[in-house]
Picture 1 (cartoon, helix red, strand yellow):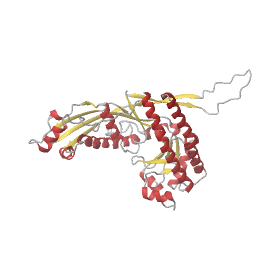
Picture 2 (cartoon, one colour):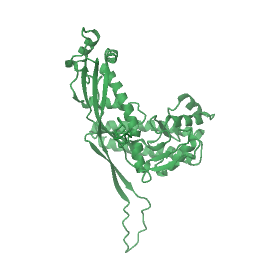
Picture 3 (cartoon, rainbow, N blue to C red):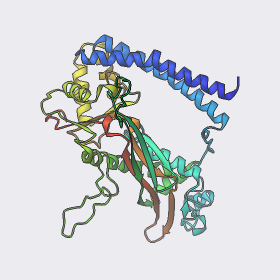
Picture 4 (spheres, rainbow, N blue to C red):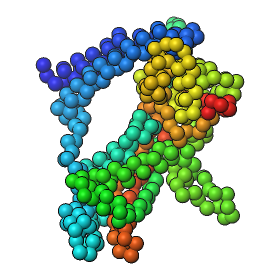
Length: 412
């Protein structure tokens, strides 16, 4: 079989698998929710278990398609990285730096041992960005768009409904104008991370065989924490309220999703007050019904909430004498779902809001060029590290965002 035929066959298999194995389960779960079935009901939990199994099978088929496409040259194959992609990121000669720090007479870092400043290689930058995203609750599930230029378009084609008309002889129908084209854009802004790496930190971490990898992991995780926070709470107009106003240290780098969605509220984004819902289950029910019905079963639909809200929901489930309640008590927030829709628990979310939207609708844009510069400061006995990267946040389509606000006290 030729590769093109194999690709077409796999694509058809994915479509058929979705239609026959995945979508019916989602539709059944949606039907149970709309009929007021409890999320801990055995029918719901059984369907959620079956959905997880089918999604695993679908992922296997999709990976097979990716490998075939890579072989055909239709997509770029995954880059096989060396065992330590960070070797040379911080030190030109890590062995020499290690020997001097641990056993040398001066215990100083020679300038010749420090890596030259500049852009990281594609392999190192990609590995560093993987560490940045890491296990950050939001950044790890939403779409990451690696950009070659400072801007990128997020195109969307919309098709109106109820536009079909009865055909009549000798009478031309009016134009429906049903198809609309819209585009949002990512426009990256440069952000700098200035880190002072202490002497003791270097001594503790440089002894290992993957010293630079360990340093990169720590630095990238710290950057990821702030970017995950910025993703929700960034506000380009933020200031400290002083006279004259002084920009906050980092919240004004970009607008985050809350600011972006708030600006679109009442237009595309669907807002709903949860002030009348006294339980987490009732709030989730209201949020779910706010999402237009045609979007509720989108494959990567997610509910984003704060830890406090997730805890309340877990307690409500845990108080029920069911298998789901037992699983919740033992496993905590891991695997927490509402009728098959995973909950993403993020401590950086505003406590009185929850969101429902596909993960792929939220985009983290980052320019592939990441730069670093190091300087040894002998007086302070530390290395001054500066990481520069360009980032932005955006969403594709407000029509698939349900934003619940005004959560009552005790649920947030």
